[in-house]
Amino acid sequence: MKHAYLIIAHTEFKLLENLISILDNSNNDIFVHIDKKVEYTIQYKPQYSKLTIVNESNRCKVVWGEDSQIHCELTLYRLAYETEKYDYFHLLSGIDMPLKSQEFINDFFEQHKGREFLGLMQNAWRTETKLMYYHFFISRPSPKTWKYFIHTGLIALQRTLHLKRNRMGWKILAKGANWSSLTNEAVGYILSQETMIRKRFKYTMACDEVYKQTILMNSPFAEKLYNKTDEYEGCQRLVDWKRGNPYTWTIADWNELINSNKLFARKFSSEHWDVVEKLTQHIKKK
Image 1: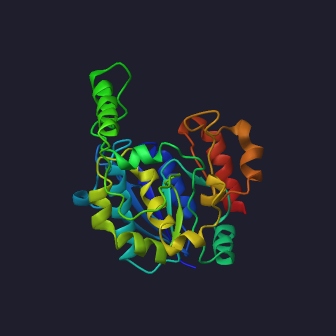
Image 2: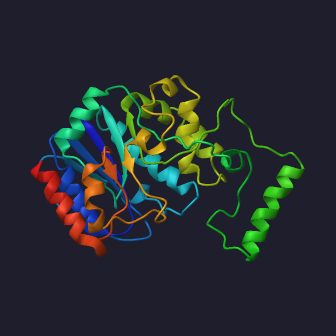
């Protein structure tokens, strides 16, 4: 199988370099977007993978909750999709790590070929608010600030006046983790609607967590999702929201990491390099 790894990075470049070294495999090509707010040149030179960096003209200044996250993802998807026909497109953060060897991951996707690995949050009651109203101040406005009061006031006004945005024929509004592993066919389907996506998801809240889920759940690809009831089993990511936002893995979590049935985990930090190094050695040895 041939895999495209799409990495979004804005900090912790020591982790990014290490991640690229782990993914350096003849089955993989690697595509990296460096946030336009920072400047960094990747030092690691892959021996087996082709490494492509998003060029300056296509780089985005990614802001939490805004559509810049979607633009960044679509840029990576488009770049990889037009490079080669990959079996899977894996969207990762620069602070993620695989939990399994590249051989294990390749075999896993070979066994489940054609399935889509996209997480769905259950009972995501705020999804309609995020999608159906205009959010003009979405850069996490702090409570008791003028932006916060204007933001909440505008949402309340739209509700009172029953002003809802075009539903686009979607019967299902869905939400979940943006980190995913999608087939060539699913990525092609998403890119076929790129113009609509860039227009319709503008001024929506945390749109990177709703656009893929909503589009694919209203398509034949809904029947191909690996798991619709467990969000992180569905996308095969190990993420802990109970101990952090999300939690940063440490060496104390070693047994949980290596015994997990998930393929990838987030998030890691150079402040806990001991677990990063140990996991890297463990994966490469396998």
